[in-house]
Image 1 (cartoon, rainbow, N blue to C red):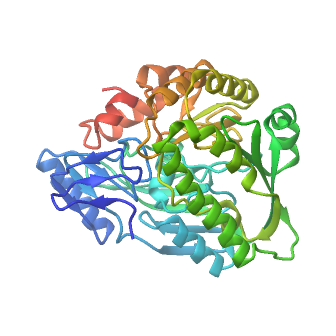
Image 2: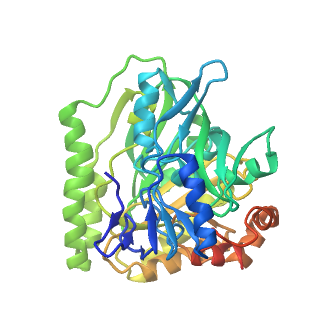
Length: 439
């Protein structure tokens, strides 16, 4: 079941409900050849082309009034190479199905984000990431890509084949072509021990460098209007497996994190003055817990409460300043923020337009419950992030443009030059790409 919806009149909407589009036609290709033919036909008809996954982006990165390609039939594992330790999957495969299939084969990705509804191509094209001291985004685990380009030809790329395309297309924003298959590096499945515990924000910020250095995967959530955070440390473990019990899991992950949280969001939306009090209660509701399980059961969690989100990557060294400024802004603003702020990290990588390209990064994500006014909060937060040369997540809300990106991405010109070569007629253009990459 896809998170995106198509209305009766052919209107497409994203998961967050903040983007809608009415494509001239929608195509569900059953093979790479059919997809390539649809691309050629769109070009002949003078229509733009976009592929869309499950609509988990909050930007209009996948919106088009031309041809919308839905890759839901292009799913499943093509090959597993146990000698090279890689797996090649069709682009429309949802991450949750990939994780399950890999686990059955005794394999796992090294790192992943916390949502697993996205397709592999949607997640990688927008730079989806988790948190990690040494292990980077999902895109950084790509070893090879298959891409249908603007002339309808199928291009394969890796470190040795079309390396300049490989450098960019791992996070290609849908601007270089339509990804049809991805080869990921995998490793034998392993166990992670997760340690979740509340901690005062002042302590987290004072000890951040140490918490980062001592843990393979460290992240925390700060609850605005409070001095409280919930921290999560994930580290490899020799076992034994000690999963969260079914009842405890239902209570903590479903009832508190989704059910009660949903009700708290409804109350906060109806009566904003209650938000600080609710935040104080929410931030204390989750108690400390430790559990050990296979990676995807530790890294990912269900997200049933719908929200809109903005996230920026700042240099890791700038994190504590950025967060202190964000907290001071919320405290003096009169804003009522009912969603926690999520903080994660990533090591520098070598992908042209990766938010962690060439620099060790920390991610700060701000959220608002769907249907509540978010503009003032996001604008004020964005001002703080950009003062620290922040790079916005490509699939989350922001107001940055090509001129800004040329300043914060040293290799920005490399990406746009490649796009000129691969898509000179701008077949894969839309309003979002016009803004972020320039005309």
